[in-house]
Length: 198
Image (tube, rainbow, N blue to C red):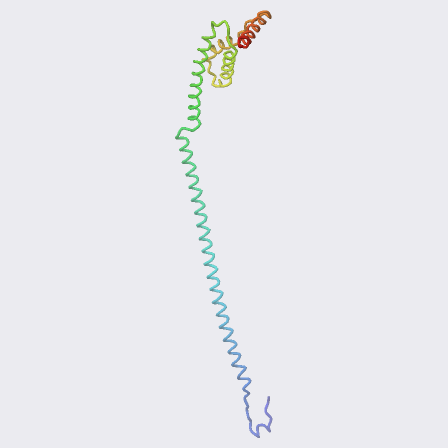
């Protein structure tokens, strides 16, 4: 506003409005507040970045530890596997021991069969009559030995052939007349005690 001549003549009066002063102080206060807020935001952001870096570092350390433990476990497993393989190579296997034990048992059984078969063949060699039960036992012994002889042992073959030949000898053929006579004799022997009783 440009003062007029009248205003100058009457005297120039300058009035100050407090509102302008208040606005200026508010602007300064707002500027200071914005600065402090910016500083606080920067501080918070830097702290957040620091926390993120710490979390990331801890996560990486944990990952490294897990990888180390996994690698160590794998190495231990490999070492144990190699050790057990070496141990298995060094000690005799269980299978050969069981096989040897089974062979001993079968050798004992074969010896028993040989003794029994020899004795039975000797008894039956000159006998005119071979009882049915003895022949059956001889045949069963031959069959049983042939079934279990998976070792290829031929020491008993000769004795068993003699035994089988003796056991397979045909029974003496009797005529019908002889059969009737034997049956009547048997019946008379059974009936006689009843006739003698009063």
